[in-house]
Amino acid sequence: MTFNIWYGGSKVDNGIQKIAKHIKFIDPDVVAIQEIRTNKVLSEILQQLGSKWTGIQGSDKDYPNNGILTRHKIIASKFSEIGTGVGAAILFNNNKTINFWGLHLFYKSFGLYAAHNKLITSSEQIMAGETHGMFYNGKNYCKHPLKS
Image (cartoon, rainbow, N blue to C red; front, side, top):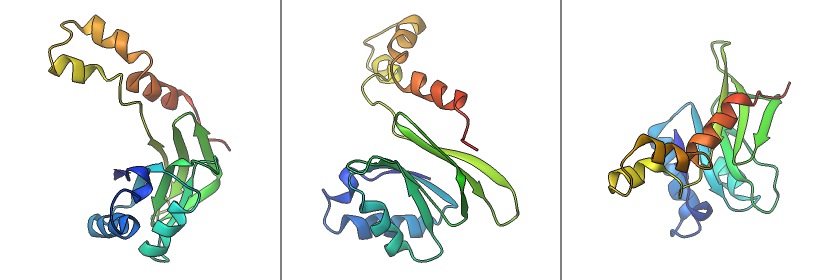
């Protein structure tokens, strides 16, 4: 599951509780969180979710931005951060490990929006706009291994 919590839930009455409520309802194995506005937000969400959940967040103490929540074990030595994303190795109960990245991609340079609105008419124009946007960010994450 991915969840942009919009200003850390601060723009909605009881935002943290509502975020936790929706995560509990969906009950995913892993959640990528975007827009963690303060160092306290992730711990508040985890408190609402309960003891079976754990999480990590970006290292910027003023604006962590990205985080990962899971009901499984995060392998602490396999955490990485790059630009607008965090990644971690997660050990599932069946002893399988996945490498998971949570991303907060740039919203302005998204060529598909321009194509949908008929502002551009060729794939070359779309790709030119993507070199600094979502496509470029995604390529960076694919090239960046988790630390070990």
